[in-house]
Amino acid sequence: MSDHSPKDQMSIVIVGHVDHGKSTVIGRLMADTGSLPDGKLEQVRAMCKSNARPFEYAFLMDALKNEQAQGITIDTARCFFNTKKRHYIIIDAPGHIEFLKNMITGASRAEAAFLVIDANEGIKENSKRHGYMVSMLGIKQVSILVNKMDLVDYSQERFDSIVQDYTAFLGRLGVEPTSFIPISAFEGENITEASIEMPWYTGHHVLAQVDDFNKSAEPTERPFRMPVQDIYKFTAEGDDRRIVAGSIDTGTVHIGDGVRFLPSGKTSKIKSIECFNADPMTQAHAGQSNGFTLDTEIYIQRGELMVRDDEPPPQVSTRFKANLFWMGHAPMLMNTSYKLKLGAARAPVKLVDIVHVLDASELSTATHKKQIDRHDVAECILEVPKPIAFDLVSEIESTGRLVIVDNFEIAGAGIILESVSDDASTLKDYISEREAAWHKSEISAAERGASYRHGSKFILIIGSETNYKTELGTALEKKLFYRNFKSYYLGMAHMMNAMRSEQQLNREDIIRRLGELARILTDSGQIFISSIAGIDEYDIKILRQLNEPNDILVVNVSDFAYESDEIGLRLTADTPVNEAVDAICDVLKKQQVMEYYL
Ligand code: GTP
Ligand code: MG
Image (cartoon, rainbow, N blue to C red; front, side, top):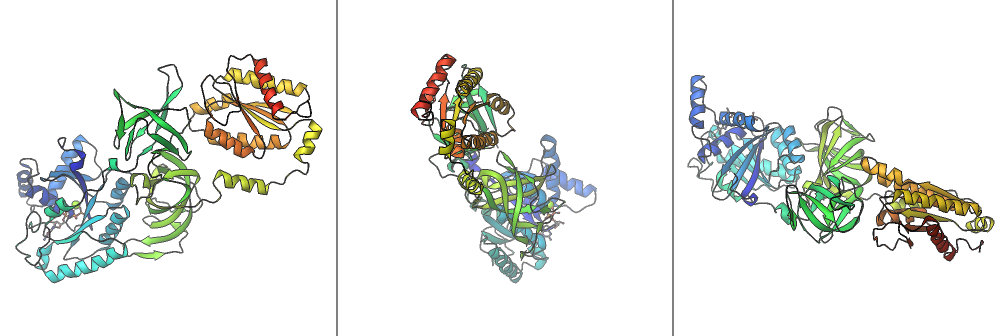
């Protein structure tokens, strides 16, 4: 296995109704390609003989399974075999629900599927259900093995009628089958060589089909996506940089690449690529776990999606349409909170609409349902309270899959079909709604200004020196207050520090509350002063918007050269506090906040 590069590997899943011959197909394929461990076949034959049971190729699978299980935990049986062309992993998917869970959580990723149908029994409900699931999982190559042809005298009519019926079924799903192959797994017909029993069939035998499946695009060739797993503080050089860590789902990234974090929208450049126990690298790609340092100090959160600025962006929304397979014992109810896992993001999620529920075996649809029952497949609209970044499964599979947890158990698994516009959720829309709904005071800002002898202002002191900021904020408040200005100081630095250590607490919420508070206090005509740490340009923009139409003055007291148009006054933490207070008052005078005083 180790002498194969990932390019030469392919996973194929084998599905089908119970007893239609999945394990026999695999056993036969392994035996006929000489892929079994030495002596295994003889051992199983001998075991059957001593138990007076007929030999079954399916027993080989059990024998292999037990062997593999000693080394590693396996949830679906997996077998490995090689052809000249590639290295194959065949996944035997006995219970379709477990299989689906594994597929969606990425435990196994098949690029092609074999669907086995017993020629004698014909199309059964799981033949259909599995066909549906394979298509739902985005596996585009499906070859149908019409098995046990020996039981129907290798009848071409029987084969043709199954081909016709099943093609019609797949057509309704929009799936075009790769091929139909008439086989007898038990007799070894059309497995690794053309069958003499079925001269009427001229297509591929199973082994030829295996090599004829196409590789899907390598994950490294897709747009770059890395869910942020963690942010580590990096103090080796006595500075305040952070390492953004995660494992790369798709794509490639290099030092110097412009990157963007979503949903926050913050941007920066890759400064270095760190690797655990290895030398720093100049590029990193899908499948690797890395840490990145960035050119600028920005605050991002676990669960954000890191993407490259020069590549197609993912979706960002609070609502999306998903195809969801529900496995929970209790049904999924509307407007009830569940937990969503999407990449590294975790969020509460609600079912807000059911487009339709599908009975996968009959492909009949119900549009009237108000809940999703166990084993239903539903096309539905899900909603999260805050925007989340994702891809459509048709574009990038790994970031287009989701899992829903109910009571600590995976209850639903799904794929994202499209983003649904979330009218009320963007900040702008929220603010205009807020402004419209707000019954404003009948006293105008000018009247207040004339009475108070000054205008209002939101003064925000930023920088990393907590004590200095607090001293400055309180001193400024006092000076203004004792000169009869309406001033009020609220220090937030400790609050932000506490939050940063507790990553669960949400910074955005605090920023939002501060912005709302500023809006109210400045509307009341006051000079509202606050100091805060761990804030960046994006946060300031949010505060500015929330405080509009009133003004904000950002005072930076950090030694850290933080270039931003948002900053109105730059001081350093070694400026004596009284001088800093005077410098701020000078700006206020220039901006005519104190015109009545002068
Ligand atoms: P589950 O794992 O239980 O879902 O079944 P499966 O799909 O893996 O079927 P399995 O391979 O265990 O085969 C079921 C039965 O069908 C066994 O008794 C096989 O010997 C028999 N069988 C499989 N392929 C053929 C075939 O080509 N011809 C005949 N006559 N019997 C077959
Ligand atoms: Mg089986």
